[in-house]
Image (cartoon, rainbow, N blue to C red; front, top):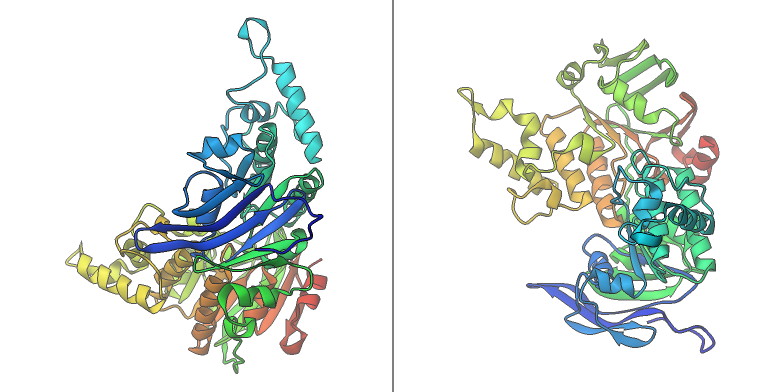
Length: 500
């Protein structure tokens, strides 16, 4: 529990010694937390630390087994999300759920639109009220615009406006920036600051530690369902917060191994795709990890897709061990020993309704055929082997891959491609949306692969991932490779300056 001055306002919402179990699993153990008006409070912890259970307790989805929920200092019991909403508590998720064919105004006031005589909906009053909410948030969105086609960032703004229309005093923002670009994150933070200045209490959850330090005043850290600390962020460093979250130092989590690179494995020469990237050239050697950094729109992901053959290029060539790859032919790239772990593991990588074992085994179907039929026992054996090697955490190998955390889903995707025995891995945003511990697992895996002689090209918008892994870093800007750093020249400052 945080110690504050007697002059400070009372918490609008609080937990006192709350515990919650699901069968034998203790999700929360004697957790206390205060949310004050006019303050942005971070909730930090790895996947499985208890963050989701805590959020759902505030939101009325779960009721504590022990302890109390306090609203304005008084004990409160929520029998469901409607009770929490009526008490002024709103949860903004990273993937909003709007009615796509209704307007922004209709989505905000669905089921409670202002009425005129004869119970007719007053559309003008609905639009006026929506415009006032957007003005309050400092955002210019047309109330009559359909929700279909809105960006994730705009959809979140609509959800926040909807919460304010219910007179929400507490906003819980669960990974709101995971799918946003840099400019969209900046706008969202402007909205968060406006809410804080208007007296709202904001609970902010993010795996991106730099965002926590950028927008929050205090942080509560959970580990294995227990409260580790609740304290001001002033004077803390990212290393301090990581240590509280995982109980280890940053150097232990992100070990970097220096290697002596071998012969050139992947050679890209003057690769050009009209209007996307131009004259891109680089090499990746055996045992080397080459990072590609840059802002959204710099052309990094498109280069990676072209190298693997997902997208065609207009000029240039890609060679593996001196042999040219066929333009736009992923099967040829795979046969040459390339593997691509794509940016969007849900939409482009995994089959979310399919089991863990089938997702891992998709690239090994030929190897598990017997007389033209699938050998299910062989498939399960191979999938179990890779799940164990990668330390995937699951209940049953037959469970749908959608039941796994983001970090474990990424390991499944790695397992699928490692089953092919690739010599060159192209990894696009391999740690996006992961907590510190899951990132550590992926970084350690990639480091071990390089030490075993694999050649790795990693595209990432996360500086800590690039810094932790790369032996060399290429900087992309507006479709061109503009800088290259190696060794001691690789630092967060040099990267941030170069990508602008």
